[in-house]
Length: 112
Image 1: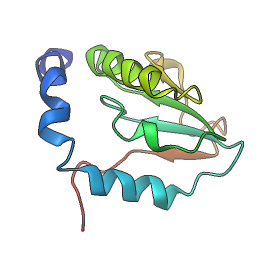
Image 2: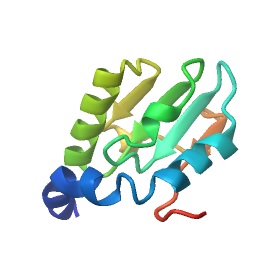
Image 3: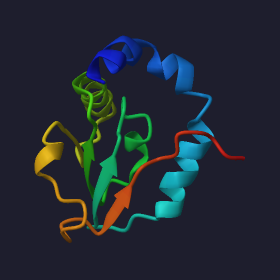
């Protein structure tokens, strides 16, 4: 699977950036993250949605693709999103352990 995303990663933002922006933004707004909450974003991709989390929360963003994670980390660093951490350590994370108050997986397609 990582081979597919290694090829897709450079084009992902061009193909899905504007097309899915509304759905990603709506998902983050619906999440309504509060100050101090821990959030796990599953499937961060290139970080297009991750930059929209409020600064008062702590976000761990995971993805199966190392190529996508590198792009996400670059985007987060450029945007100064110190409260979001793109993590390759997804295998050790238990999403239902209680470590995270919220879990997010922004939509794969936009909804009006």
